Length: 224
Image 1 (cartoon, rainbow, N blue to C red):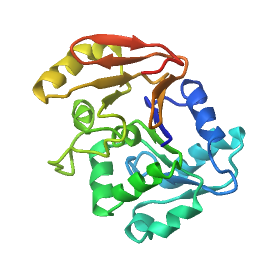
Image 2: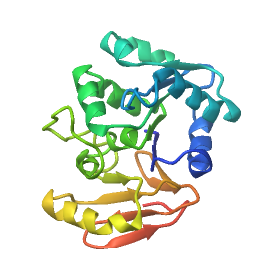
Image 3: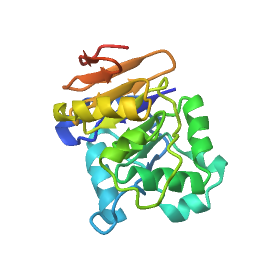
Image 4: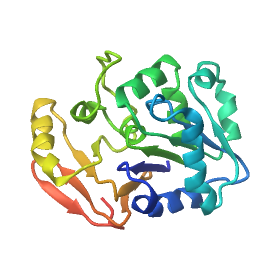
């Protein structure tokens, strides 16, 4: 398993995580980009793809393919063998999880993870890789009326708060109590985590933070 979870930053904030992701891709195959969580009124899909290319072309990625709702509604599992990795963009976490369920895409993501295909999640794309999307209640409107918040649970039973800032500590501890969350990772925009079967490593200039009964700082390059 090779998962890359970004706190939601870009540019210099995510450059270390981006470079690590690129180093593990099969560059002979396209990078699959799934931006369906985004608000397309503010960020049309062509602009999203332009942004992704501006981020990863300088790092050596030359082949890209974007799947939106149309492609996901008609995909075949064998199609995923054509890609060297997957990048799931940010936006509304509830819409993203609902769409992935509706398109029967969650099991395919699990299969890719088991095959060690690198999967990168930015913000909402990171949250759906974890135990639940409950932390997104603090930031995203549940406009799709989602009532079941269980996600892929590929990160050792952790939930995450993306875009974490210190002023969220009270909210995180309240969520732990209210929703019976067992352990939570706060990932600031200048940080990310790299997840394998055996370890979780903090990647980036910034630290990540673990919450359960207490708060603990995990510095860059440390494992937990």
